[in-house]
Amino acid sequence: MAIQVNEITAMVLAGGRGSRMGGVDKGLQNFNGTPLGLHTILRLQMQDGGLIGDLMVNANRNLAAYEAFGVPVWPDTLDDYAGPLAGFLTGLERCETPYLLTVPCDTPLFPLDLALRLAAAFDDPATEIAMAAAREDDDQIRPQPVFCLMRVQLLESLVAFTQAGGRKIDRWTAQHRTVIVPFDQPGDSPRAFYNANTLAELHALEHR
Figure 1: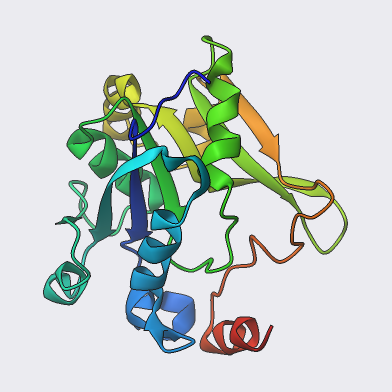
Figure 2: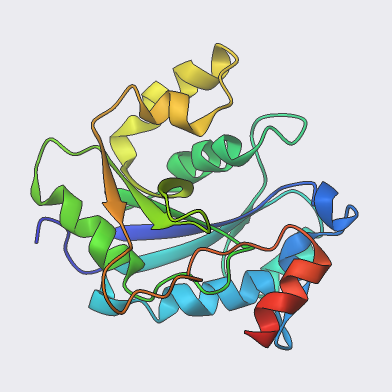
């Protein structure tokens, strides 16, 4: 495999406003008794293959609470809650490994082989980004753009894109050799990429 052990830094994206959750800090809401942000860190530590070395969190509020999870915490370098792409930018700026993996804090059942399967796309040296895709309720397979594995060399490109006002992940990834990795194989959980936008959805995921 092109990517070796410990060559990936994983970043938990917890920097949003949580507006659909009533403005609460989503990463600090409990999932089965554990804050979502910490749950996501633990799930990243359990990833198959040992490819993930460093871990960090992107958060813009309650930084001390996130720091208590035991990994570095970095706020957006872009102003005014600029969205997940601001987290990508922060991650690439801080990443000290060849690859950065981004995972949102509100999708607690993401696969334990996520890093391994995205990394396989880099067996092709032309690959710059690998993006997960999953089957949704309408039976269509759609990209999950916040689940991205990318080369750290893309920092310069992302700086230019965001400085020009770009904020959409797919518009940036479209500028690069992006491989879509479907998680729709036998044995893949159909709920793996369900995210919780509201407290009701979070409680529903707990009961699954």
